[in-house]
Image 1 (tube, rainbow, N blue to C red):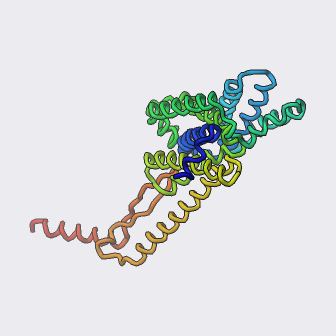
Image 2: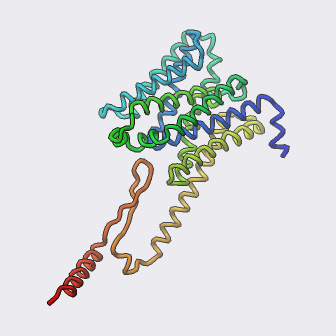
Length: 328
C-alpha cells in the first residue's frame, strides 16, 4: 500500500495523476469513434495542427485554450470538407492540412526564438506541471464530452457506421460532424500539456484498438476503451514516478503493453476457435448451410449460404412430398 500512497503526498503527482486519468478516459472514449471511422491518423494530425494554433495564440497574446481550440476546430472542419470530395481521401486531407499548420508553428518559433523552450511541453508533454486551473479545464471538458456523447449517442453512432444511410433517416450529418469535430479539437487542446503533441495520437487510438480486439460489441468496446485509458493513465503515472521517466511516454508505453497482451489473447482465442472448427466433423444435418463472417466498418455480420448438395436434397425432398400429397 505504501507504494500506492507514498507519491500522493506530493501535490504535483496528485495533479498529474488526476490529469492522466481524465485525459486517458477522454481520449479513449473519443478514440472508439475515431478507430471505427478508420481515421486513426487524425489524432496525430490534429495534434500537430493545434501546435500551429498554440504558437499563433502565444504570438498574438490570445488565450491559449480559445486560440488553439478555434484553430483545431477549423482544421477538423477543413479536413472533413476536403475528405468529402471523392478525389481526395481523408488521409491525404489530414496530411496536407495538419503538416501545413504544424509548419506555421515551426516557422514562427524560428522567427521568435525567445520562447522556444516554452513549447517543449507542448511537443513532449509536462504532466507534472499541471496546475489547479488546468485540472478544472480538463475536468470541465471531460464532463461536457461525456454528456454530449451520451445525449447524441445515436447520431454519432449512425454517422460513424454509414453517413449516407444516416442522412436518409433524417440525421443532420453535417451538424453532427461539426459537433464531433468540436469535441475532438477540445480534447486534443486540453491533452497537449499532459501528453504532448507527439503522444496524443497514441492516447486516442491505442486503448480503442485494444478494446476492439477484446469485443465485437459497440457498447462493451466503449466501456473497455475508457477503462483501459484510465488504467494506462494511472499505471503510467506511478511507473514514471518510481523509474524517473517522462510521464507521457510512460503512459503510452503502458497502453502499448496492454495492446500487445490483448493481441496475444486475440490470437490464442482465434486459433482455438479455428482448431475446434476443423476437428468437429460436419453431420448430414449441417450440410444445408454454411456461414462466414464479413467485417464492415469494424463489426462482423454473418452470411449464410446453402450447400449445393443440401439444395439438391431439399429440392428432391420437396418433390417427393409434392408427389406424395397429390391425389391420384
